[in-house]
Length: 214
Image (cartoon, rainbow, N blue to C red; front, side):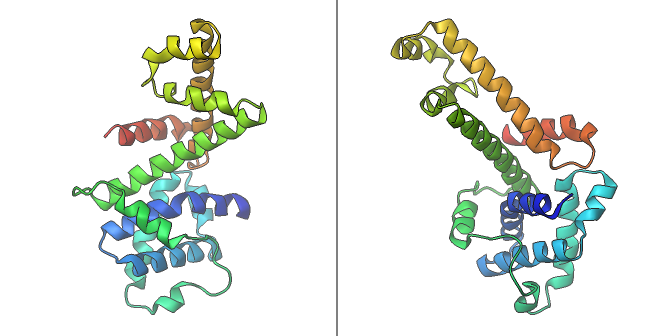
């Protein structure tokens, strides 16, 4: 993996890492410090090459590496964890804490909280790509109108939307079908970036939907 691609992956995963550490008992400052220090170490030492060689799920590798890092860092000075220089991943501290407090308040394990944030981030990344593609075709407004149908929640509104747009109901159904198909392809691509072996993509997708469904 190129450094740019690795850095992009880290940006995707810093939120799951942060909420995992918070649920494990770290306070706000410690969780921020450990998150930044972990990614600094990960990139500086090229540990991500191990993930590529193992051809496993990046999600699993990352959590294992994090636990190892934290166990070695509890007693060190926080300033040493930052590694000096420019941090490889920019972390928005207020956003991180707001995001954490919006997670379910029940007694979820840190691992389950990590997986839930991982799944949501991948879905959000997929929706962002879909929105950008639609905007390039100058159909941004249509995207927003069709978005509620993406999950199947708005199917009863096909007729009303068709009337508003002045098209047949069948045209709306076809457009939604195409949007769903494109989103599935995008999401599959996003998941493929997080596994070393593409044969694992289907398993990881099933896990993603299972996490989102709970």
